[in-house]
Length: 564
Image (tube, rainbow, N blue to C red; front, side, top):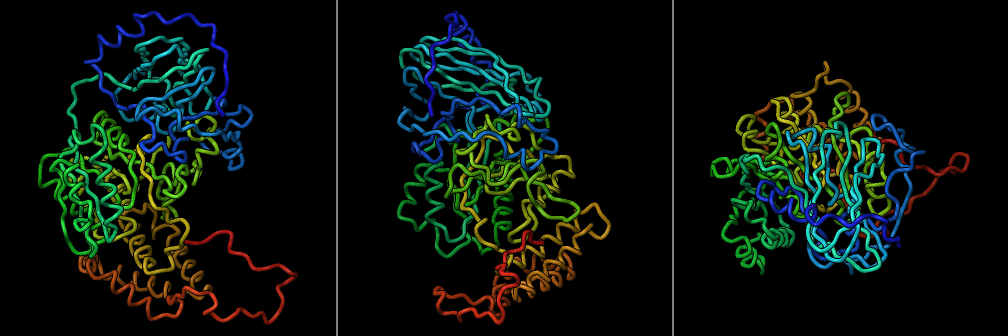
């Protein structure tokens, strides 16, 4: 909960340091991140923007070695659950602080990911600029890769603008900057705040957005409306492409004219056959290359909710990167808005399967354990690829390595990231840029028609990228996966996996040939098996009967681990 504090015994800030220095140098700065708040004052997302908890760091007793954190320690940071006060939000960039209360902006969306700027750009310092009314105290903090917190400054403000320049030198392996505001005996208001870097006159990247959609016209239209309504976003965009591959088209939505008008003539809808995510995004890449206007193409899924500020941040970061860099956003759960899908992802080369980078925790809930109190979130994690729910790709990368492979779905994003990495183009999953996406973790798509694409594309990408003879342990684990499905009587999945391997052996030309027809064939194959036939009513199935009681009274349980 918000904590009541006495006004610190600090000298008032020198008016010159509050306003004049910042005003004189503003033209020589580039804003790379604005402090923002939820557009709809959503209580479920508010913990990603503002932290009301009094706790300001990780417990020293549970501070971990981020290089290889024990699982117990990685979850042993203190849990601080506090009420969220959406009524304090005055606007997209303004926040009220009642008298005697203190709030922290050391949050996912409003802290500054200093370690990522230190590693991937040539920027040497960042400036925090805060504009306030009332007389709050601003306290600036930084952390290191272990989550240890250091207070950098504490200044009582007045009406106007205050700024501080902060070095990025200490952040080689991790760490953040953030600030807290504490109101004294009178209420205060954060009018706005922003993080800026020296404007070195670098080329600023125009961006084309490429959205692939299939029979989700309502989701897609909502996303287009959000893009058009976002303050200042259209200035960054050259074009918004929608690759509509379905039979329920976005142009038929009642509000499509409103979407088109909001994007000020920059919207273009392309109708094509259903070529999957890879085919849709490849078309977006190709169209962007052909237009010759943009520096980047931003790939977005259709079933997401945006934080528009994240797009501006990703573009600014990519502009400042020392080499052309793929900049990806995080994915939050659309149904549990404060839950992160994964912080950083990699391809485990021995098994050749994707997964979280060692040291991170999947499904982290920021409403339960905030950024400041979670040690592993303070380390910088490098990745092999980023999911294409949100991924900014420089056209220079596509021009050199080509379009995404014709894989339909599954593994296209991972393969592209691996291919780019081999060519010298890194991928960064960038904190502060994110979307909310419909989750898929509550279903097992390895047992439906997608089993074909899981198996085929994993083998294709392994053949192209595995550093081990015979793919490491891929063959063994693939066989275990077949046995698992057989023992579970999932015969359709086994047949699809075998069909996938046969198609791999047919050679690479089969990928293009099957791109428009593979889905129908996979569904037809699966339909031949009884395990693929579903019913809505559980009573439509025979009642299970036991021949013998369970051994020693123990009821069967799901396996503790599943082979891939």
